[in-house]
Image 1 (spheres, rainbow, N blue to C red):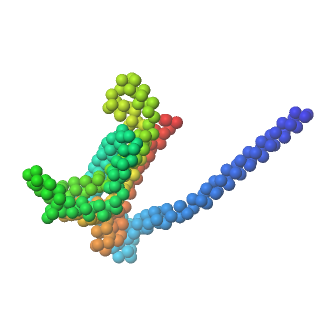
Image 2 (cartoon, rainbow, N blue to C red):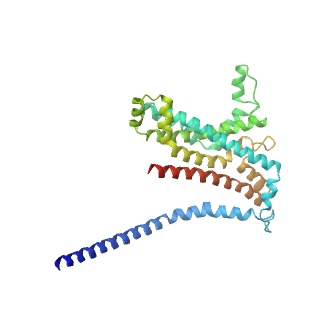
Image 3 (cartoon, rainbow, N blue to C red):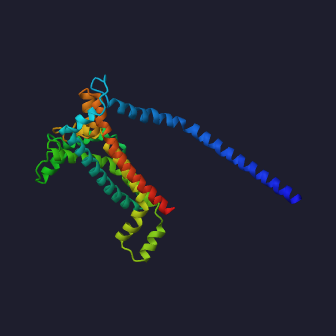
Length: 311
């Protein structure tokens, strides 16, 4: 009898403790939700509401007085200029991100093998392009590319190399825009990859060296697998930012020559603001969404799959 009573009292105490823990967990969840409400309100006001309003605008006519459904999208797809904008945006974003990833990884790998004291100095200098406002730094690049007094062409002429029409010929203008974007964005990749390299355990490199692995094999079978997730996230983030780039194209080429360097953001500004067709400009900007959504889906799915495999 005594044992049964003690057992019953223990179960009751356990139930009370369990109930207290559940109430405490619910209370903490409620507090956490209340604390995130300001952030949710900011995201809703600055992201969700403008996106929803842009979708609504894209379904209106030029005077914004009638609903025309997908009419703006149909007109854009029938436009040869806009098809060129799609090609240019994809070419610009993919090429720039690949170059930024390669240069950023190389810089991070070099910095990783520099002593800590000297590394701070080099890291600070290499981050300067990323810290300077893009519009301001692009003005400096415009001065270096401008055909009348191009400092780059002046250097080329010293070595008897013909001057390059950086901003006057379509392909050179495309290359110029990519160069500026890579110069600006490569430090971001560098600092992200450097942090990832420092998180790779040295024991893995020591084990690989004992097994006779070469430098390339250590990079391929140790470094890259350990950095896969951070590489994927960094590339995805940079791809989104690069697709949405506006100031470099606007300042450097303004979409020229012959509208052949426009990207989605600059062309949306030209159509929506300068030409006064706000709904069609909204439709231009929304073309980025399905492209980036598909890319983000596959990248994040790959990251989640790898996390489940490692768990």
